[in-house]
Length: 218
Image 1 (cartoon, rainbow, N blue to C red):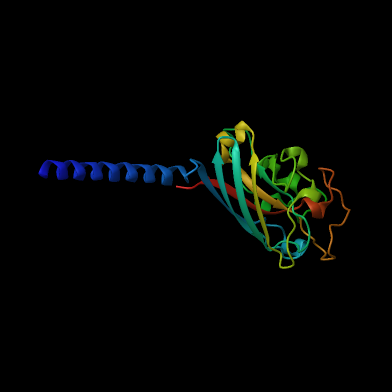
Image 2 (cartoon, rainbow, N blue to C red; image 1 turned 30 degrees about the vertical axis):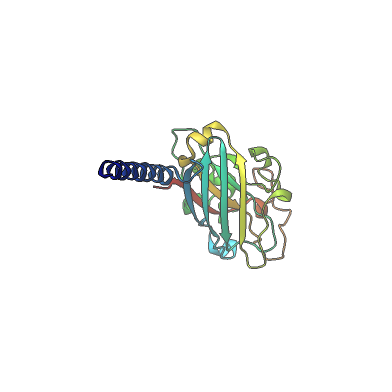
């Protein structure tokens, strides 16, 4: 009887140890699906307040990467109400260092007071992935406003979608940035068709308003 109890106790300890190791592995990998977890805190792009009407957009994103599949949960606020907002992963080629643009990027383009998308390319790099609500998510859908998330009356939006990403993005996700675009500068309820920027798009529709670095969750 004593031997039987000893064996049972050892078995219980072994099982508990295995469960602890498994739980630790799940926590380290970011979830029971084995995904790698990332976060991004987006701050307002530093336009001249007198030129952009005092835009103060921000956002937070949670990303889980499993292979080439990326689950995205993004919440934004301070955005132009009832309008679509182009959102992307921007990035340079590894190992180039990317950043969010500073106020020194204001000069150039169609406005010397606003930081247009082209003005910030030297900092955060080109569009790599588009956060569309359906269909294609490549850079070719960068300004597919008809498939971009729309902010509510209060200027907030929530985006959730699982998408496939290129291998270079998956391998170096922690070197990329998320950028939200679009600002109704004159407050007329829509994006004005003019002026057209260096990228061939209306300024209000493509204007970067929030940017943040994607960081691995420790």
